[in-house]
Amino acid sequence: MKNAQPLKIGLVAGEASGDKLGAALIEALRPHLPEARFVGIAGPRMQALGAESWFPMERLSVHGLIEVIRHLPGLFRLRKALIQRMQDEGVALCVGIDAPDFTLGMERALKQSGMRTIHFVSPSVWAWRRGRIPKIGASAHRVLALFPFEPPLYEAHGVPVTYVGHPAAQRAADEGSRARARAALQPMLQNATGNAPVFALLPGSRMSELKHHTVLLVETAQRIRQALPEARFLVPMVTPEARARFETLRAEGTRAEVPLTLIDGRAEEILQAADVGLVASGTATLEAALARCPHIIFYRGPAITVWIVKKMLEVPWVGLPNVLAQRFIAPELMQEAATPEALADEALALYRDEPRRREIEAAFAEMAQTLKVDTGARAAAAVLEELAATELNR
Image: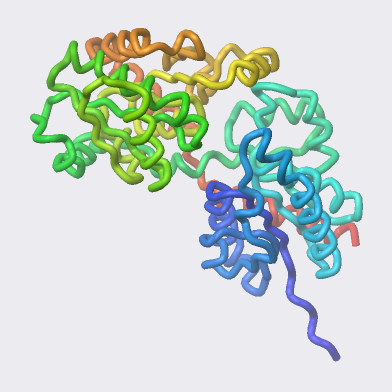
């Protein structure tokens, strides 16, 4: 008699954030499914936990309209091959982790073939294109949502959804985080005294964002320094390439002279240490909120892209902390409004208004508590429920 084949669960992650979520899911499922094999597309964290990556994750990490168009033929071939192998290998259930442009199409084909599917991380339907929700429901038997305001949107369309919280909230700042972060970063604060103003400058991680934001932030810092000579500026750099690009753009784009401390990584620590942050719109704004860092949200980009986004937006806020709060906790300065003068004025006003900063910090602490649930455990419970449904339907 042949031994029964081990249960196979498909996991497809498209970038580093998805790799972290996938790893948390594997860890939470292992006690329940010790013999299961996890297969598909995995990053280093998932692979370290035994996941088999049939294709390199980097092939999905394509950003920007032109880059995506250029890579479309290869991405279509990859998706077709992945779908076929999932079916050939007898995968019981597939979880697409974020990367919706790739994973939702894969999930739709697998669902139509009879396989159970889950989409982990809701696309930003709360911000634009809510008409996508029925199509997402046609792709996935269930959506796993990171934010508490997302489930009602799916429930209104009859799409099964589970709130799993945001994993970053597990590392949210506490009452002592600022003092600990200041002490850890003290050698990089250029001999600043313990109460010197510290500003975190986060220009974004993509090369296109650095192009639009480097000079803007340098000239903003110069204006802040003129008003607060003792101010210190910390700039986390996500990669060596980003650091080199920032330094090149700064040298070529402005004569502003202001001491900045560029630090490889450590964005979370820098945000915890800062009195005020200047943060490019994106996931870093949520990181700032979880670090209890009062901040200003800004963004500059190609005019046509910003115009399209504005036309599609269904909420008055861009930054995630404001969306979560349903009000403007963090000021937002976008496109033409994001000038060195305006950013410096907002940052100085926020720094000088300590009661306001304490109110913002308290609001961010409450926000973190809302998001602070065991994401891996909740996601694993949803997977186990869908596997049970698979057994019932056989």
